[in-house]
Amino acid sequence: MDPVIIVGAGPVGLTLALALARQEVPSVVLDEGPGKDEPRLARTAVLHEDTAALISRLTGVPVNELGVHWAGWRSMRRKQVMREVDFEEAGDAPLHLAQHVLTGALRAALAEQRLVKLTTESRLDTIEQEPSGVTAHTRGPKGTWWRGSYLVGCDGPRSTVRKLQDIRFPGRTAVERHAVAALRAELPWEDRALLHRMPPWRTSGPSAGEITARPLPDGVWRLDWLLPPGKDLVTPELLVARVRETLAGWTGGSTPPYELLDTGVHTVHHRLARRWRAGRVFVAGDAAHCLGALGTQGLDEGLKDADNLAWKLALAWHHGSHEALLDSYQTERRAVVAGRLRAADQALPLLRGGGGLRSVVPGSARGHDALLTDGHLGRGPLGAPGTYADSPLAPRHLEGEVPVDTLPGSAVADVRVTAEDGSFVRLRERLGRGALLVVLVAPGTGVWERKHWVTAGIMPRLAASVTALPHHAELLVAEEYPGAAPHTVLLVRPDGHLVTALSGVRPADLYSAAETALGGPPAKAEAGAGAGSR
Image (tube, rainbow, N blue to C red):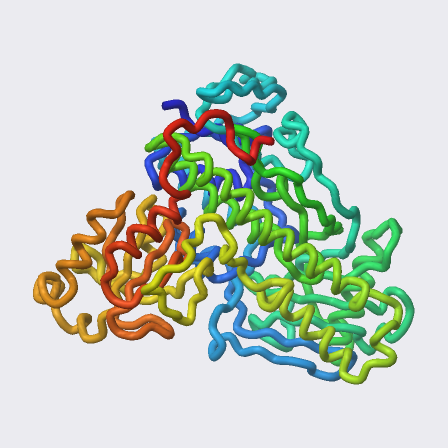
């Protein structure tokens, strides 16, 4: 079968290629550029815990070698500390890293992959679809025709793929603008991110705004200043003046020594593609959505797009097209991003307005701070990880379903499990291999070798049920899982989202849930491109 064609060699496209290769699916990555990324310390990304784990899993690089896990978070308004979070106690510390470091790690991993072909200086200009596949043409020094089973546009907000498929991309332009500087300096808080609203040295006017400081490795910080609405030019002189007054304000004296490494202006747009699938063509990342106001992270969502789509394309590639499963990519991911955009658009007038509720509602400043903190830390309506509870892949009305701390459709907790070979691993290490995961919660098993309990109690019956599932599944055993009683059985999708939790061994419920999670029983004749193509 023909490889999957991936248009765009940014973090989302490279992640998708590696995720497919992990599931034995070949791909061709069409890179418009020369195959090298300019180091830009003013261009960074914040990844939440599960997304950072995905990158580490695909690249083989520990996350702490890619960036900095924040030790804590502090919110201030004028001189008052509004909120502090200590991640050593709270856990789930975001990972902050330079985007070129992320891309470099993905490219290095890609170079070791026999199933991925990366071609540079290849600009897409034509897509043709047939029932059996996709043909794409590139121009440039290496211009040629490419044949693929599917094509995924990961080619950014000006996506050629999206335009060639006539997919609308409505939304709002320049929702926010930030002046950005990356610099090396000693700040009063080590490895702790800071959001400072209305700093006392800028007490009035449209530029009073807010400043964000986020640490990077080697004593480097990224500083963002919210700019007033408009298109006023950000000159080098203006930026240096902002740096000097900010550092002086934070250290309580004259400007301390610093080394300015990189600068830029970051403009946030809010857009959402009408369709994420057109037959055998899909869009992902910035080609499908733009977001980023109020601390939310568009790249984190783009990497989740790749993770969601990879296992569905892999099943279709290996076992034949299943339209309901492929359609679920748009249903699940578009709903999550749309919810994030709605929450941001509702909060923007309150947080960026020139007064309004702030002047009349007691405690509104603290409420606004909580909203912004949620966006930056991946919590609440602005930033909490998306769930697929309303997905067509979610089973309904299972008699044996029981509640655990993870809601169905949400990402599972990363507990220690015993693998089929008897080794102890983290649950997230088993994700992304194309298999369903069945996890038995069995306290006490961790002190015995697997051979002593694999044939005892309910294990033989559960193992037989797993073998009978409609798709390959791996049976794992956990000593405990948050909120789960002993003998609870968890069914987990290849991308780490919980399908269901069952009380004990229930072969019929387990089979039904697995079949639904795979898109339902395949139709006898699945013609066309499914609902996503209309």
